[in-house]
Image (tube, rainbow, N blue to C red; front, side, top):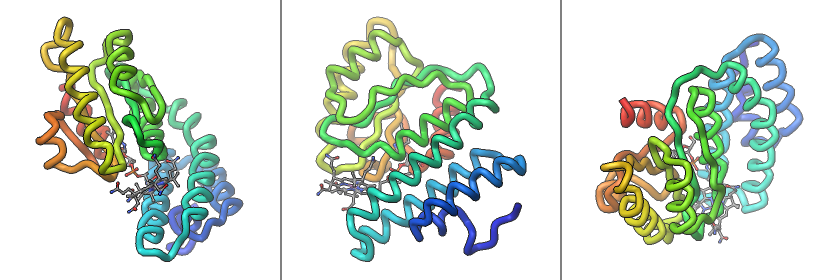
Length: 213
Ligand code: B12
């Protein structure tokens, strides 16, 4: 099945057509399409909804509805990504920083990296620096991922990176930290001393692979 422009998943998500979105995902999976492509189309839909919200066209209720469609889509897609799972990635601890409850992007990153063979340890949202540091100490990951969508989250990002670096130095000379989410960019990455940042999950995969190479 080859979706026309009007049938694309991102378009259906923008139209909040939950039934058609899920039906199309089922049909395209059935036809053998790569679930990662479908994840990216859902991702694009959520980003478009976000932009329409920012422009004032959509209200917050649209964000919540779109988030619910994405959650249901993920229920169909994640098991397929897992079925195609390759082996031999590293281990990542990932969290949305203190004060921030956004998790749609983080969950997409988890789905894609997990499918690529990474062992993902998800700490959830609104995670204080001490909790991240404790999990890093317990799990001894190869890389730490932090998601931050609020500019008010910079202080939490800084505290988390500083604490983790201090506490992990006994067993890792420099634990790589990768940032993602709407509030981060190259300047934030530089200022906070992170190792990489990225704007979407697909690029995130390449960035994390490069960090661990
Ligand atoms: C959806 C949404 C919500 C939903 C969140 C639902 C959920 N479960 O996550 C709800 C409605 C709950 C919400 C609440 C709020 N939101 Co909001 N929200 C958004 C919105 C529109 C889209 C975010 C999203 O899901 N995008 C789609 C995903 C797929 O993209 P993504 O998050 O960028 O993730 C991708 C990459 O960044 C990357 N990535 C993300 N994390 C990571 C981590 C790693 C390690 C890696 C490698 C990659 C990576 O990969 C992802 C997949 O490709 C954004 C707008 C925007 N431009 O982002 C505002 C936005 C982030 N929200 C905003 C605000 C202000 C709020 C509220 C404070 C509103 C309020 N007044 O209550 C609250 C925050 C409450 C809190 N304490 O956190 C502002 C932040 C402004 C700022 N400068 O700080 C934004 C930018 C909107 C705006 N312009 O005003 N929000």
